[in-house]
Length: 312
Image 1: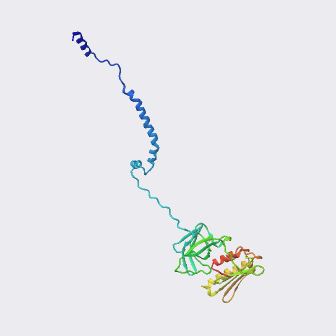
Image 2: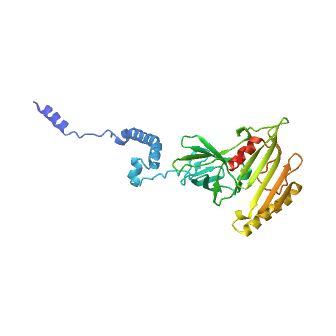
Image 3: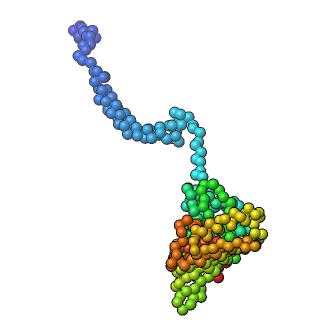
């Protein structure tokens, strides 16, 4: 190799590198960073509703992670009504409490020909004498045994009363059911009676010391004959007798010429004979065995037998 070639090689080795520019990494990475931020924002926007839902849900794993496990909430069952539906047959015993509208009946005790029961009104004063509520009595095999007219005036104070019906008799070895029925005119069963050629007939209802004859024309009420005999011996004290006589004296006076109350040696006898076609019962007389003119025979018969009168 000659000297000129050696000199050229040495000159090449001694040449310094010249920087002609720099490759900026930040200029290349910026588009990637923007894309990553966009993806993150998109993920957050999509996930936000789900996260919010999980934060509100006490059963979610995220809620439990942030708040810890909560004590389970025990759902209190809805209390069953303390009253059974009186419109449905219910067992008649001391544990039964049933309700129909404002009417409450509870603590039934059955003995011989009586039903002892506690009655009250759930809301306001309830006068059952002016309503057509009946307690229908059934055997354990669902045979209708009797209908009992519910009577008396009640408020929210409980009253113990005795109910009876014509021919009622209980067997202590048997169980019984009852339901309350509010009768409509069309619900009453028909009743038959002997009539004359003009269509006039009657039946007599008896209970204790009272006898009432109801007179009908073509099955519509036209007259009432009432007779009550009270003996002194039937009253516990003389005062009881005198108080009862005073009540019937006032009743005879209020009814006027159609009624009398005569006293004898053994007691007194009250009598009233009301021709309803020509006589109007005064408003002040509160006797629920007296019915208005043209009341149907079937209604009178059903109500009086339901009160314990024997009607024939």
